[in-house]
Length: 316
Image (cartoon, rainbow, N blue to C red; front, side, top):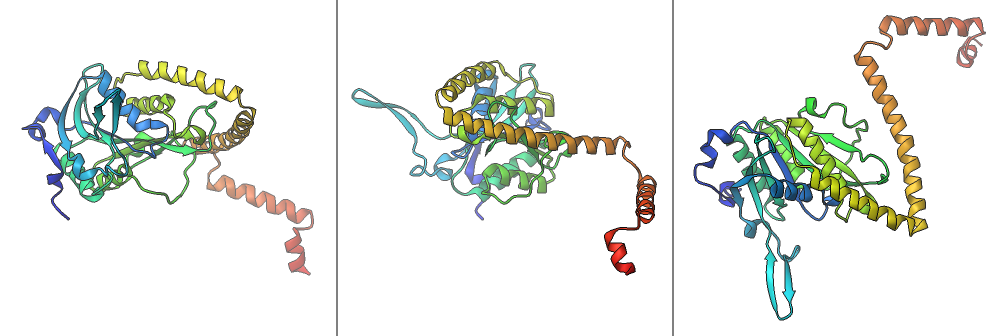
């Protein structure tokens, strides 16, 4: 593998600056499969609302496939202007209370993922990152009329506890963010990821609700004061627009009703299992001796009633 350090430029002295060491790192990369535009919108809002400075810039010409994802550009009457070129940078950011953190955001690389991942890990090790927090959006069969679930993942179990009641095992297409989680964990850096479950029928639209929920989880995980006002207003406006479109289309409304029924049923089972786990942790469930007594009592009652079908067959 070629030297990962050739993929990026560092601001002079940035990696040696003690004030940038031992900070949390937020990873928020946007790409076409970023459901609801969750990670991309979150990164844009943080940069727009908070004080920041670029400390590392990755080489977009090496990492971006321009033919697969062409830059946007305006045509105004008789000329082109304002091309939007891909960027991927690491920023030093201050929250609303001037608490610093690191933010890796921009366009997910199309190429050289392994070099990119190793480059990020090397930077994180030099800066002695305290924890890496990863934001993403997944398309899921959930209704927009219910609280969006969040799939929590990573090595920092203390930051994930109580968020995800459903813990599936699945094989899926990877992302640069998921590879970063694996590599950072292997390097001994704690990770916590928050994958917002975005309604499938809204996955290709920008959904501020998803970015808002991800921002709230970031705030809780590392005690950051992040700007939510813009996202709250945008989420209210988006919800109004979505509901208007649903009311105008009975077929879509019927589909959402079915999703609501499935969601409510599944959430009831999840809440029940989480309650059982909580009771077990609190010592409210029977211990081994109590369970043994219950089983012995059950077997005794079966004998009094003539035994089970199986025992009667064996006796005969």
